[in-house]
Structure formats: structure tokens, C-alpha cells
Image (tube, rainbow, N blue to C red):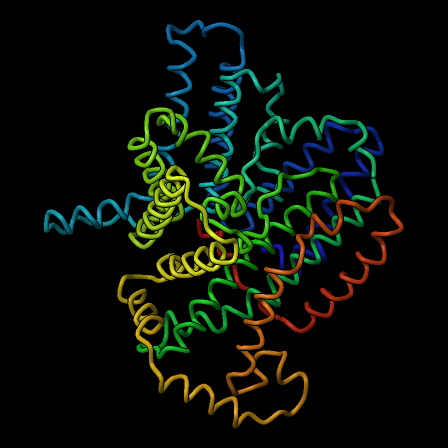
Length: 489
């Protein structure tokens, strides 16, 4: 079930919220949690009910291991807590590896050995990367004594809470469960409802209007055209760069907004990454909870920056190489991760030599590197990636002449012909949208920055209902919805 679908917006979300607070109002707190878990499992099973047993078995296993780790002293089973933690993490990674990488491994084994082993064609269960990483954080936090004694119902709510279940943010047990335990959060809080509707509406607009519009220009360039000239290649790469930005940013806003309806605040996961002045700054702003996970559970355990420059560079590069592979079983993701790992190594060396860079130049280099690397992230194979890159970097003066001619010959019919894709046949529309996207990502503040200083319900109500009207209009214009990009990871 998509956040941007009619089923979610007009049925699932309001019914879930209303029943949850009705049960809490009747002081049926346990029933309210049961309802929220069942609703979240229904939300998950909407995609494919066949994978419901997988997430339930995964929760039962990790709850048992985590509960044991949370006890004082070593477990009375002949193994230390560290051994049990290692076993728990390993089994989670084996499960993830089987579903996500077994076909990829056999394909490459066939290529190396010149064999023809049959592929099992394993279907990737929805959200397995996110609910696996979420539960690994629970195991580690339990080992470190950061989780309290909660029953399985609370644990199931922590894992399955539908706003973060499908594509994050990756949350810690101690971030979420104390909020559900608070008696103040069991009451309807109209300020949070208005704020949640406002943020959800902004995210809905980003996804349906902005991201899906840019997809209409990115997809033909990557998947349909065999050759791209200079302007077509740059339009293709920039369109995907902004499609991914507004798609993920839109999902994040919708997740935070939906969660606020239940008085639950999810951690910030997206902080204007295209304003970054360095590649390190970019990764402090993009998919923040995944970056923190890779830092805390991969980079630091490997040694971090504690063992000299050479090993620091190796740890950085390895972390992002594996981070790239986490996104999917494809060499394109490995190349993308290696590019970012290499860029971070160069940035770290630059800092250690005490060198500085003007802010504007830093932004220009960072944005263009990120845009370059996204080509590999999006391309289905090297041929498709090189097709786009060849068009971008082999300067074609004839392409600029053709683009200028299309602008010169463009006939203005109405304002709608400039602003609504599909109504205009010329290139002017995409150029205006790209300029508008640059303005939005560089000069506008985050949703959280707009709402954080406000107090009371009165300020939020006109904002919330204005955006509700905007997204109701949008919903009436768009009858089909595309999947969020991060659902594939």
C-alpha cells in the first residue's frame, strides 16, 4: 500500500488513527497497541501476504535473543552474551543475504567458472533490509543495556509501526517505545494532528507532483533512448537526481507526518542534502539513519579512525562499498558505493593536509559529483550508464543549437503549458522545472524548519488545511501512482 494511494489516504490512515485513539480513550491501551500492530501487519501484507510469516518469525527470533541479552550477566546456556549477539546478528544477515543476494552470487559464480547453475529466482520480500537493520540495532542496544524490559507486543509495535516499516527511518528501540509508553501520547493532541497533516501533505506533493514528474524525463533517457546528445544527457541525469531527491524526501515527510498523527516523532532522516558543501556533509544529510547505522555498526567496529590514516581510508572505502551493495544486488550499486567511498577518502586526506575550499566551489563540486554518481545508481547496466555519461561529457555544440532552436520556436499557449508536463511539446518545460527544483532544494527550508518554531494549534490549522486542499486537488489530477524508489531496497 503506497502512502500516496487513495486506499492509504482515505481509508487505511484515518481508520487506523480513529480506532487507535478510541481504544485509548476507553483506556484499552493493550487493545490499542494490538490494533496498531495488526493494522501495520495488514499494511505490510497488502503487498504480498506470503511474506507475513517471514517478518513474524524474524520478530520472534530477535525478541527472544534481545530479551536474553538485556538480562544482567551472561546467559545460562554455556555461551557469553557476546557470542549470542554475534549469533543473532549473523543469522539476520544470512537471512537478508539469502533473499537479497543469492541470485546475484550465483550469476557471478556462473560468469567466473563458466558454469550454468540454475538461479533460484528468489523474490525480495518488501522492506527486509529495513526491518532487519532495525532489529540488529535492537540486539546491539540490548547487549549494551539500552533497552528496557518490554513484552513481545511492544516489540512487535516497535518493528512493524507502519510509518517507518517499509523504507525507514531506521529507529532504535529507545527512540520509539518510551513515546508509546507515555500517557500523554495516548490522548488526541490536535497540534500534532495539524502538524502531521501539514508535513504529510508536503511530502505527498513532493512525491506525486515533483518526483513523478521528473521520472517522466529520467526514464526515457535511461531506459528508452539508445543515444543521448549533450542536453538530453544532462536533462536525464539531473531529472533523476531531482526525482530521487523529491521521492525520498517526500516519503520521509509522509512517514514523519503519519507518525505524528499518533503523537510519535520519528528521527529526522533527510536534511537538505543538495545544500552540502562537501561529500562528508552530504552523508550527514542524506538518509541520516542509514549513515548513522553504517558508522556505528560497521565503520567504528572495523576500527574507524583509531588505527592511522591508511586503515581509516580503508575502513571508509569498505563501509561505503558495502553500503552501496546494501542498496541492491547489482554491480551498479557497488560502483556507486565505491565512488562515494573514494570521494570520502579524498575528502579525509584533504582535511588532514589542512587544505580549505571556498564554499561555493565546494557546493559545485559536491553536487556535480553526486549527480555523476547517481547515473550508476540508476542505470540498469554499464552500457546504460556510459550512454548517459558519454552524452554529458562529450560536448556537442549541435545539441546546444538544437536546444536553442526549440526554445526560440516554442509557442506559448498558456501558463499551464509551461508548468504542467505533458501539455508542452518543447524543451522549455523541463528547463523551467529543473530551475524550479534547484530553487527548492537550495533556497527553501526543510519542513521541520518551517514548523519547529510554531506553538499552539492556531498557527498550524490554516497551513495544514491549505496543504490538504492542495493535495486533494493533486489527487484528483493524478489517477496512477508510482512506487517509492527506496521500496526496492
